Structures are given as C-alpha cells and as structure tokens.
Image (tube, rainbow, N blue to C red; front, side):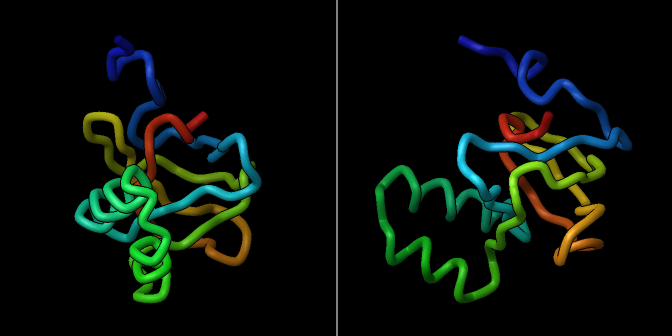
Length: 99
C-alpha cells in the first residue's frame, strides 16, 4: 500500500504541475465536491459527474498547468491555479495529480 508521504510529496507553498494520463485534470471547488466527484467516478455515474460540472462544483484545467499548493490533507491537495484560463481559482485535487 502506498503511504501519503509517497504521493504528492510536495508541501504547502510549493509550486507544482498538475498532470494526469489524459489531457485534463478535474478540480473540485470544495472537499465535499471532491468526495461527490470521486463517488460518481467510482460508480461510473456519468450523469452525476455531468451534474457536478454543470453546478460548477468541478472544473478542469489542462494537464501541465502550474499551481501552488495552499493546503493538504490525506491524499488530496488544495491548489491555486497559476496559469491558463482558470488562473487564480483554487480547488481540491487528488495528490496523485500533483507533480
């Protein structure tokens, strides 16, 4: 099992790159929205994921987007987007996506 110290090892205030194996990175506007997104994704609930996007609870940035870590919890990180059309917006992302 992978420990939290091995995933997203960057610390608060570090600059990072958000990256996935696809071209986009999902970012949730709150921890609650992150939990909803994760549950919908695991359940393969496409309509539930679309609803979260439509309600503005989840947005996307391009893989390779720069961000600053502003908070961290077990397996998730709060980041502020530093470039692109979502610059300045903060949200929660899986620690796996923080490089």
